[in-house]
Image (cartoon, rainbow, N blue to C red; front, top):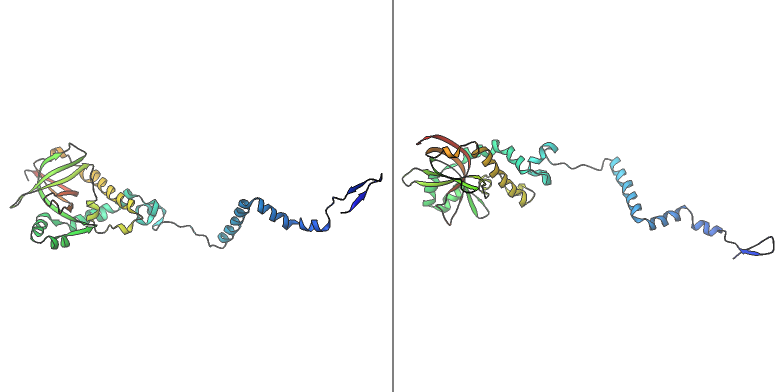
Length: 257
C-alpha cells in the first residue's frame, strides 16, 4: 500500500483510487449496482422500452367485443360487458314474439298427443334443456280467478273442450323459473360466458313479460273475458295436469268469450 510523505515529515496512507479500482467502478459497474439495488425500477423501465418498441411496430392491438363497443353489450360475445336486459330488448320484437306466434302448438293438440304417446309428443313439440321439456303453446279460454295475493301472481284460464283444461298464466310481478328461455330454441348456454349470464337472461325475459305483456292489462277487469295466450310451458312429468304458462302474448277479447 503506497504512503505519502507530508511536508513536516509525517506519513499518510494513499487513499486515492488506483487505476484498477477506477476500472471496476466505471459506468457499467454503477448500472449493475443500481439494478441490484432497485430491481423493480429496472424491470419497469425494461417493460416500458419493450412495450414502446412493440407499439411502434404495430404489434400491440386493442381487443373489443364483436359488434363494436356500442352494440357489444347486447350480444353474448360481449363477455364480461354483456347486459342481459339489453340482449332481451334486442331480441324481443325480432325473435321472441315472432317465434311464439310461429312455433307455438295448440295446447289441446299437445295434450292429446301426450295422452297418446308421451315420448313422441315431447320429441315433437318440446325443447329439452337439461332434463326438462319446454313447449311453446297457444290457447283461447275464459279468465276466472286473478290471484294477486302474492308476488308470484297467476291468472286462471279455462280452455273449453270435451274435457275443459285449467291453465295458470303467470302474471307476476315476480315470475320464477327458466321456462320462457328454455322454450326458445335459438337461446343456448354455449352462447354465453358462464352460467350466471345464462341465468340472468332467464330473469331478464321474465321481467320483460311483466313490463310489456302483463303491465298494460287491467287484470281486475279481465275476469269473465276471453283471452288468447301464446307462451311457454314446462312439462312436469310428476304432475302433468299442472299447466303454468309464461306468456309472451295475451290478447283480450270481449266479456263472455
